[in-house]
Amino acid sequence: MTQTEFENLLQRFSAAAERGDGQAFAECFTPDGIYHDYIYGDHTGRADIAHMMSDLFHRDAGPDYRWEMFEPVCNGHIAYARSLSSFTSKVPDFAGRQVVIDGISRFELRDGLICDYSESVNGGVAMVQLGVAAPRLEKVLQRWSSQLLAQPATQAFLTRAKGSV
Image 1 (spheres, rainbow, N blue to C red):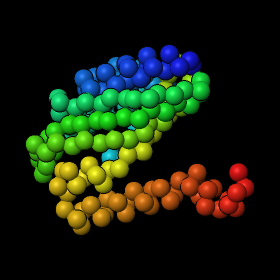
Image 2 (image 1 turned 45 degrees about the horizontal axis):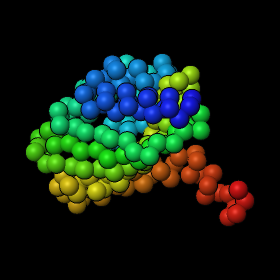
Image 3 (image 1 turned 120 degrees about the vertical axis):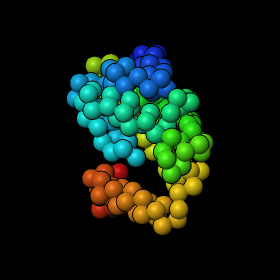
Image 4 (image 1 turned 180 degrees about the horizontal axis):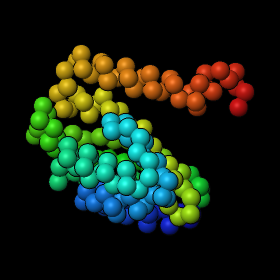
C-alpha cells in the first residue's frame, strides 16, 4: 500500500468511526481482520468489528465522538498514525463527562485493507477524566498491566539479552 492509499483508507476509517457507521468502518478491514480495543477487547471479522463500533462504542460515546489522525506513515505493510479523540460519555455512571484521548494507532495492512489494528493510549488519563474511583481504576490498570506482560512480544523482549537485536 502506498502512503497516499493509506491516507485515503485512514480518512474512510476515521470518518466511519465518527459517524458510528459500523458497516463502513468494518469494510476498512479484511474479512478476517482484528481490532484490538483496550476497553472492549478483541473483535475479529467484519461483523464483530461493526458490532463493536456501532453497538458498544457509540452506545457509550455518543454522537459527538471525534477521532482525528495525524502524521500517518506507511511502509506498505505496516502503518502508524498519531491520534486525538474526544467524546461525551453516555455511560450512566459517567454520563455527561467529556473525555479527550491521545494515542498512536498501528495498522497491519493486506490487500489494501487493515488486517490487524491496535493502539497505544493512556486509558488511565481517560478514566480520570470520567471520574472513575481509585479502587476501580487500580483494578483496570492491573488488568491492563497483566495483559501487557502476557503478550508474546513482551515475553520475547523480556527474555532477550540487552543489545541482542
